[in-house]
Image 1 (cartoon, rainbow, N blue to C red):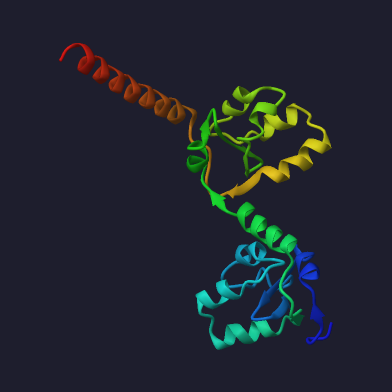
Image 2: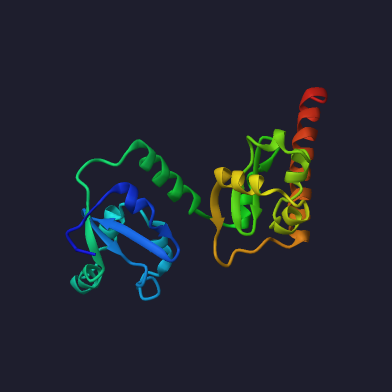
Length: 211
């Protein structure tokens, strides 16, 4: 492919899969698919910005002239002059969102009647708006607190239509190395919460009736 080839935003967008990554930097487009394993900063950052304009992120790192020369070896064209479409901007924003990393502890903080995050196969979903529509009820979702619910999801034998719909609710992924807290720790945290609530209640009763 000619290094001067004009590439549209829609074409750039098509190359955002793990083994097919194009990025735009300073108006130039690079195919870094074969460079992922060699990238000093790791492959994750390139995959995260696949199909998108990574100019700001590239400049923030402050790459050396040698790093820039390595990048230039992968140039395949230049991005079109017109601005990205609204659809593209919406897609790019969503892609950055779903690649946000969370720990299990952070996901657990989103487990209440009106704020329900669920982990399935280390992918994080915000099912708050979907909870009331869930055939098994929202309590089933809340019970997955602090765990990876892949086994439960598979046992439910959801149809393909549900699996596709799940993508709309993805908000991130579990950080590498993060593991579900031991069951006892979850129980201890719940007991601690109950004790705090009990203490507040006792304080209210004392203030109301004994002062």
